Length: 338
Image (cartoon, rainbow, N blue to C red):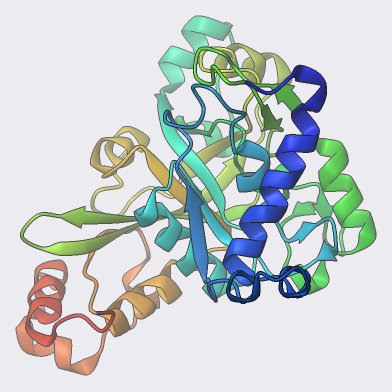
């Protein structure tokens, strides 16, 4: 166990060491560790904390949160897709999102579906605006990128998420000030640590992504475009405390109307994992195009048909059941990622 007065010293060293493992550090060569100084030329990473590590050592929430943000102790810099619980499928989801947007991917649990009736029952107030049909509670144990606070501002002064090269010192300071670091919940992290805590404080267009591995098929993608929602403070507090009030929260309302998106519940019901990656902007069509290049079939999405580009060759496998045709095309052409 780490003495409490040494917690942050340990946490800071952990983040620096992991960054050096991924990308290298010339200083290590000066100390005689020439091979280690090269790093791993990493494009993504992850940390297996629970439970082998966190039962007796501090959790990795700070490392996971800061690696996935558009800045660290050196200022603004490119994002690193870095997954909690070493969820490699979500690391790839995060990687796809940040490669398309150059913005921070938010790692979250798809924790709870809150129906309008349930919210009104426990809070006495109705959901309104984009949240009127219900919301998904995207929350994770303090490992979400600080950009997810939406404390950065666009030209109109509205909360947003930016490419790393557009992050100003004011944006970085605002994200840091919007985030507090709560003592780790000992029910989950017996070894202690600190978890990032914020709520996404702006209504933003976002795309939620998940790569799943299906036996007999291989990797498949799920994509949900929608908006983050800002709930009234008293509604937020009641719902937030049903899970863990020390973790970062994003309230998400998917765009409804497409097959599989008849209701917010149906999206939750069809989601293939308890994890997801969220990026700023409606970029589902770009993710679908990337998936077609990699021969990864898309099993669920709500991108309108007029925005979807399908390779011409895919039409040879059918034109009515496009999803089924895409699965057959990807199987026939084979993966491009081996």
